[in-house]
Length: 228
Image (cartoon, rainbow, N blue to C red; front, top):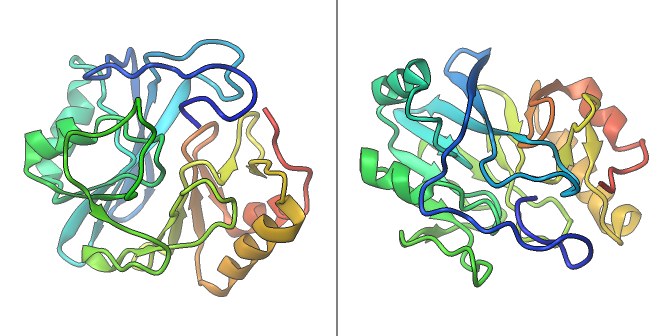
């Protein structure tokens, strides 16, 4: 999560354009990769580590960026790969994951999708096409319900058999965990367990170790949730 929760530390102000200080590319599967950067406004005590992940997926003639944050200007390998991909979609998965959606829309002319409501101090300039659980995006991507009540819509990517999350799950110390809510057992776990009906193989999260498998997801539903 990249702004204040209702308890704990204060809001991390966003810059007009992120100034990330390092970048790393991770391959996931054919047509699915991600890049990691150090979040420019990170500070200790936020409950999540300094590295955040953004996903690029090619599906059914579209190239979607999910929760994209700009790599540093000198991360030429990442920018060259993004430029070669020519993204057509930029998708915000959660109200406090606006990140650099405006930059990517302006750079590539991508269509933007995301929540219909945002935090008052973190609103994109771009007008986003609203999505909600059950929405199908261009390229066959499907927005999902995570049960957490935080406005997040994880995405199912059928072609690559992947689930991509904003904050519903996290891996701050390498192990995949569900991010805690007051209604973890009543709402969150049943909603996440229902996603096991999808034939996914990969799970991508925004914070911590980015890529996990189905077994790790099943195990996460049984473990104590991450509370930061």
